[in-house]
Length: 393
Image 1 (cartoon, rainbow, N blue to C red):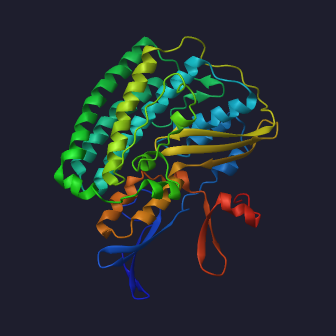
Image 2 (cartoon, rainbow, N blue to C red):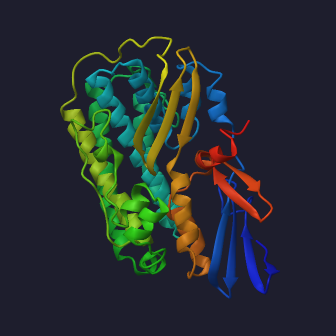
Image 3 (cartoon, one colour):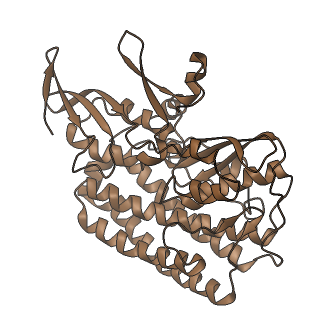
């Protein structure tokens, strides 16, 4: 890290390559002593052209491509995609397949939240909590491997259903794993809410009111920690959520501590929902037939990823390949909250604030930089249409 003086102010650049960042992103913090007086973020270092690549692959091949937008939440990307394609095709996966999709999604949420807990604790210097949470997340990764044979990209979904069934032996193993994880989560909740050193780093840090969260477009646990009552599993239930409803988890704290509490409470809710599905697993087939050529049309598919609302726009021209797939990830929505709430905090609070939204850089890189002669500005793909730009080629 180095500093530079600009207009009598010191600007501290962080990244794009930096020991504190696991992925490339560039931040500039204007500081007055140790207090941050301004912040900006520059993304776009790992754009991989996945949306454009999807246009050259068949509907089935795209399942495996879109899973690789994110390693932590690959299943939810595939779920959003297949639900949208199935809607275009006018088919619906069997109830048992929808239930297995939901079980896998909630196991993935558990994995994501435990991974985030460790990363956020590490950024604050709490490496013991980091090591314990990452040790325990091995349990849920083993369960996902038991279901699908894979610990990262599960490839559970196919168009019209799922590949893998859950027999009695696998269900019992999942229940045993949940019992262990629930006990550990109670311990983590106690640490997060009672440890004085931890509270000093999180209580009152990154405070964001409900009005600010809604104005900045925050989603997921980041928004729900500021009393925003929004969860796609509840607002627009999909897969098996209509039959196994989720309870909304919110907190009125609005600070970094509240973001920890909301995610840990969501773990308890995930344990409950998975047990309920396993106890009432529907009987029947795992797949239904889907045509190779998807009827022409366009559809929007929304699901609740671990980080928040995941939005897919899918357009078909009636062929074997999509005409357009647009992905808006929750990380992109939450970045604005970081640069907004950073002002007024100490520079030492920035790593935990950045980790507080559970960012994924490779997920959200859907942006370009346009210099219009009055300084560089950053635009999302949605804002480029007024300039006649649909997407970057």
